[in-house]
Image (cartoon, rainbow, N blue to C red; front, top):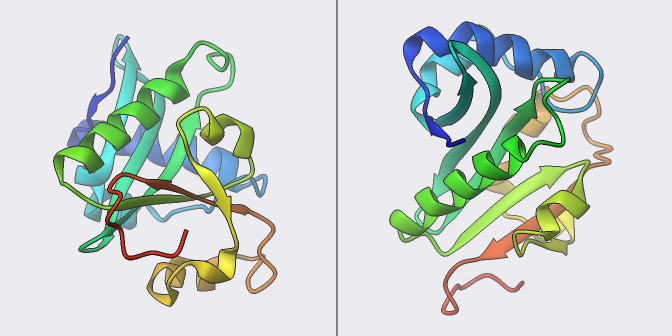
Length: 158
């Protein structure tokens, strides 16, 4: 099993997968247009032509990227699909030579396996909060902020 870059034809399935979790308050729902606009951020895992897992690596700034919209189709969870997606995102971040990767999550134990550490949400730069304003839970975020430091010379205080 491997993750590969999403294709245009994958976007409706990514949208359905992400918004299925979004409708239950487990992640931020995303409009179809946003997924098309950011399709190049997404990695997918397929079974045949079906997208069974997805996740995105979004560039925020020269030294900071976000792993977001990590979702695995129910019935396929527990098979390592999410891990394959996150590993692909981390590999891409390394290839881009970015200093830090962050995630906002309800599954901190999952991300700890990749070396992410918990940080105070308020320690994240304000520029990462752009999408937060669309969240129905804003400003009372209950997600865990986590960071993976890829470069020791990172300017960040975590």
